[in-house]
Length: 97
Image (tube, rainbow, N blue to C red):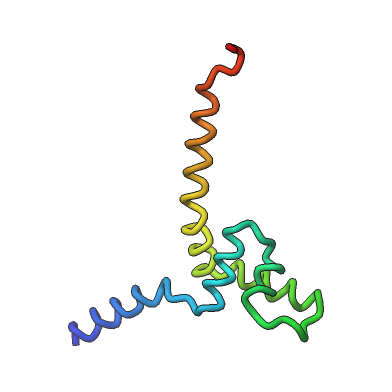
């Protein structure tokens, strides 16, 4: 019994970050700076959705903990690069010719 419980725990832990291909595409578009609605249109077939329904679906998906975590993971390198760039720019003395 203990062995089954540990394998279930491992499965549950593994399942935490499993995204569908559409969720991954949505997260990637959000990480690139697209709005949730535009990202939703890029990842899903929203051709028959009203603007209001699309907005609601996009907001729900963006609040999904797995999707939100993936967006954060995808943004980390860009945020780090921006901080490094800003730090270097702050150290450059532009007043000297």
